[in-house]
Each structure stands twice: as C-alpha cells, then as structure tokens.
Image (cartoon, rainbow, N blue to C red; front, side, top):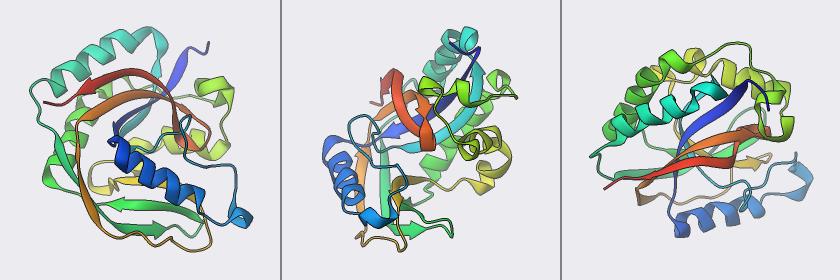
Length: 195
C-alpha cells in the first residue's frame, strides 16, 4: 500500500437519486465513452474535499471529521441541471447553498493539517489513475475549493450535456472515499449519517 491515499470526503445521494444518476450516465453516447460510467463500483457523489493524506494519519483524520459532522442536520441539495466542460466531462450541477459551502469550508479547514504533497497514481485504488487525476487531487485546494468550489455529480463523458431537469433531495450520508481512476469514489473507508 502507498504511504499516501487519494481521499475524497463526499456526499452520497440516497438510493433513488443514485439510481437516477447511474441511469443518466448509462445513457451517455457510447461513442463518447472514455472509461467512466457510474455504477455500484463507481457511485455518484458530491465531493466536499479532495486531498492526498498519509495512510498512517487516517484514523486521526476520521476523528476530526467526526467533530465537524457531530450534530449536523441533513443537507438539502438542489441539482440545477446538467453541464459540460470543454474536455467533454458532463455532470449534474449542484447549487452552492450556504449550508453546503459552509460544510465544504469547515472540512477543508479541519483537514488542512493532514494534506500532503507528492501523491502519485499509487495513492489511488489499485494504483489506477491518470496524470489528470493526480493533478486534480494535488491542485484541489488551490483550484477547486472555497470561492472556486463547484459542487456537482460527475456522470461521464459526452459531446453535449444530457437533459437533466432540476430536482432537490435530502442528503444525510457522508463518506470518506479512497479515490480511483477519474477521481471516482471506489472504496468507502468510513461513513457518517447526518441527523
């Protein structure tokens, strides 16, 4: 096992929303497939933080997450539609609500001391990661957090964003996930239930 782990603190949608995201992912054009489809081994999620951490620090890190999540109520998550990057990645866009951005910021600050530089492909599940995956996790704090936080549920790849009508759901499940290729949540290391 690598000394470092690629870690994602994520919201796991309830089963009906998970199934909806999996169905949209499965319906993306086969010609645009680059290796990412949501399924049981690649569950839909909304990232709260990503970082490389020392495997030896994991228990202390999870204890810190306990403190941040203790007594926190479920979140109302609003999906506003679908979107696409110029690089053909498509996702369900999630509204930056005050409660969601506050939880993101609290976790980013609480886990800052555990963040490590120098992670590579071996920090991902089965050592399977693209250079873009490594760069994404390495640069998450600088490029994708706080004012640059863009919550979403990645669906896969397509030449155009799929049709996704806006909807809202209650999110009560948070998980610490070991990341895999395409920064997917591949292995749940621990879960929490917001009450």
